[in-house]
Each structure stands twice: as C-alpha cells, then as structure tokens.
Picture 1 (cartoon, rainbow, N blue to C red):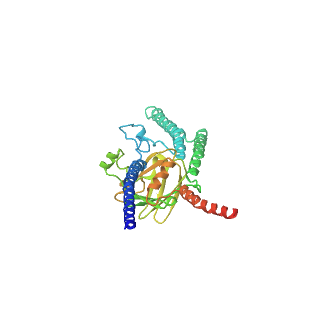
Picture 2 (cartoon, helix red, strand yellow; picture 1 turned 135 degrees about the vertical axis):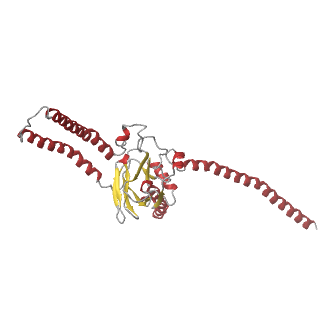
Length: 332
C-alpha cells in the first residue's frame, strides 16, 4: 500500500509538473505570435512605401506648351531629351531656321525692290533685258552651296536615326489597337501592359494634360539603350513621342524597331501619328523613364516580371552549395 501510494503521489507530481510547464510556455508562444504580428505590421508599410507610384509630370517637360502659357514656345519644337532630338533641334535652330529666314527676307526685299523700281509710273518704256550672265551664275552656285551646307548635318541626322540597337538594349514591344496601346517586355518576363486614355476628370485629378494622360504608362529605364519594337493588330498606327524625337510606324504583320535612349528621368507624352479610325485622337502615349533601380523595382512588382540580375543571383546561390559539396568530396 505504501509503495502504491508513493507511485500515486509520483504520478500526480509528474502530471502537475507537465501542467505547470505547459502553462509557463503558453504566454511565451502568445508573446512570440504578437511579436511576429508586430514585425509583419512594421514590414507592411515598408513594402507599401516601396510600391510603384506613377511619377508626377513636370510642367512643360515632355508635353506641348499652350499658346496662353508661352506663345513663342507653342509654335516651335518641344525641348528634347534624347541625343538625336538635341542634334535635330540644334540643326533646326542653328542651320535651317537662319538659312530660311535669310532667304525669305532676301526674296521679299527683291520683290519689293522690283515692285518699286520697275513699276509702270517709273518705267513707261519696259526694259528689253533678257539675260545676265553674272546673275545666272550666282543664282546657280549659291543655292548649290546652301544645299551642301544643309546636306551634311541632314545625312548625319538620318544615319543617327537608323542606328541599330546594341545587343544589350532592353526590348519593349508596342502594339497598336483601335484605339489603345499595349506594351510587352520580352526581356523582363514577357508580361504585358494595357494602356488606355484617361478621362478629362481623371487626368485633372492626377495633374496630367487631358488627352495625353493614360492609366498605364510605358515604363522604361533612363540612360540606357532601348529597342522599341512596334506592330499593330488591325490598321496602321504610329508610335510618336515629339520630345524624344522618336517616331516609328506600327504596321500589321510587320515588326519595326528603332533605337531610343532617354537622357533623364521624366514623363514624356505622345500620340498615334497615323490616321487610324474614328478614335484616332484618343490613343495617346505616355512614356515614364525611371532610374534603373526604380525600373527594376517596377518590373518586380508586375505579375510575371523578372530582372536579369535576380536570375543570375539565384543561379549563383543555387550553384554555391553544389560547388561546396564538390570541394568537400575532393578534400575527402
């Protein structure tokens, strides 16, 4: 009896000990769960803050200028943010515009001089002069010289615009539909973005110009070569961004491509520049150029989006344990 009594007491003691340990561990588990919840709560805002937010446009940059804001600027080209655009704008401002201004003023002066000098009142008897060798030589040689001066930068600009994209250029495919655009990223997981024009109210809320703002922009990295490919699903469209001096047709059944390098981050607006139907005026283009780090973060935020550097890093991480095991086997 005494031995059984001892066993009973021992069983009760063990049971009490286990119960005490369970009670002691329960608060720790609750505390751990609360800590994990708190950590998740603190991480959530960080992830939310890192989420993509469309860049706010800069007034007058990458968009047309209203006549009311600047009458002179509204009648000329937009400021350029690509190397080809800067060269073309320089050619226009330094060569073409001065040449055509001088020629126009010269011809106007000649016309006024002839009207005054050879009017009927001053010349009752008309002149019989029909040829002047010196004048004929001058008006043949001078235009040739002018054309040669214009031809040199013109051919250079033409060659620059047809430069082949390098192998490391990031490829983005723009497809025109009646009447919207889609953008495919074959180098980043082949995901697709559908872009439609915002309503006037939506554009005003986002602080963007009406009939140029879209719900999903074509996001690209700034400062690196881009291979812009264009095609169309129905009729001929044209992908055109005036402030980047970029335009290429989107033709059904054909894949056109052109090199584009955007100098600096920003939002650049354009429109379809080929008459494509009833809503041709309502399929704008909006290109958002981001620093490379922000562009890669945007790519990762897209369903199916991948970045080449991440793939290389993952492959290296997977190969490291295998190499370590091989080294250990070799050592043994």
